[in-house]
Length: 161
Image: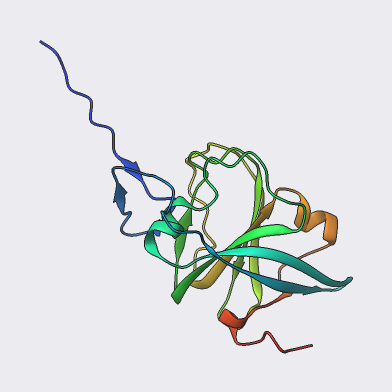
């Protein structure tokens, strides 16, 4: 007797309590909006050119299947309303630093050098407005730490100095 094996993939980003099943995970059909942001840390300002993922399919796909990311590039996940995200690295080919950011732009937690391909859930354990993914190790190189401020229009502080 043959046994059937059902495989269900879950989205890259989901609510901890209710993962969203994704059956055909493909790149979003439209190009992502681009922007820039600045991270204010104890040792200065750090500018990044980013893509913004704010639609369900964009958030689900994230940086999957990319073999590189520019030195000062990244992806900002805008959840709209704060929620507790469950991030993981399925189909992600490069290590990333994940900065979990509160509604006012404060870096709450940094998951450093996340492991490519890992299905381990990464979460700050509380609701956040967004997550910034940058190259693994880049936050340490720049001295970015929890408590630093991410300046961008989604946090309402893009004109702050």
